[in-house]
Length: 433
Image (cartoon, rainbow, N blue to C red):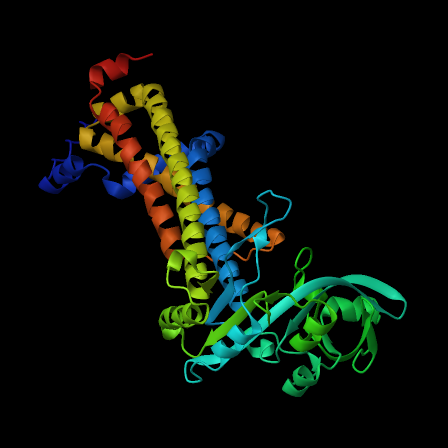
């Protein structure tokens, strides 16, 4: 005689509530994770668009910000609170033709002196410059150098202090002494690393005494500051070039350093009025000079680089959208492949909301995982910008936005496949082959 089977345990209200509530978010997370881990290569390829999109946003914005920072730092290294006065009138060549050979020098040495004496409380320093390219020679070694005639204030106005020795003085300018401050390339190539202070240097056919050296400014090629030779302006005008305008010696540029940054625009206006009066000109369109504001130049460059950064960021954002479409396509395929699984789950009591949650979590995991990999890849790619001399500047806000956008992409593009899975009929799903 066999024992009668034990009666089934009664379904309590708590068990019924558990069945109605489904597996919950933790259960859906586990199911989604197992589905992703079962096909790792397919999962990576599905998230590849998001990975590339996030990496591009992080890397390009960091490199763009680093480029902006470099440009600003380089401009400010040439001097702060600067106004640059130069000639503006085009030059008309001879021979009956119209030839634009660059602006005729119309800014005179007297103009520079007037700017220096304008208002000592607002003008921190003035450095006129005139320059020419000559052959430099010392110890039987030659190299091409740029000779710049200027005043001693050049050291502070252009943020160019000496590394050793000293600058020439106002007395050297007044007496037209043949003394020179040389760049680091001339020290290395002409003096073979020896101390050049006190040694002779030939510039063209004129012999100078080296009184100071400049530090390495980290630049090469055209306009290399390490190949510059600074000499008194009066000596330059006597020995190399003495262009004149209405009988007055001229200079190519006059650098004016304002005492305060917030006074730069007002000082620019006042000095424009001063020079217009000196040149007896009343129409701003016919001024034969111009004054450039360093702050405006920095702002313009920053505006350009910011625009370029936003442009490449938008392009990277498009790749994120493409990645989201890829996730949606793969999720639709996954719903089709797992139709019987969906049918079994529904037959066991899963509600449409459980199926919806499961596929939404799976799509979100794919996009969030792609976002994490994209951030890591983008940071690594941005540091690769160091090879081009650009130090990346990372913005936590940008990284968070890119990561959040990847999550949004997963939810947005995963919603339709999830709804399609949730609406499948359980009987038809079980019959699906």
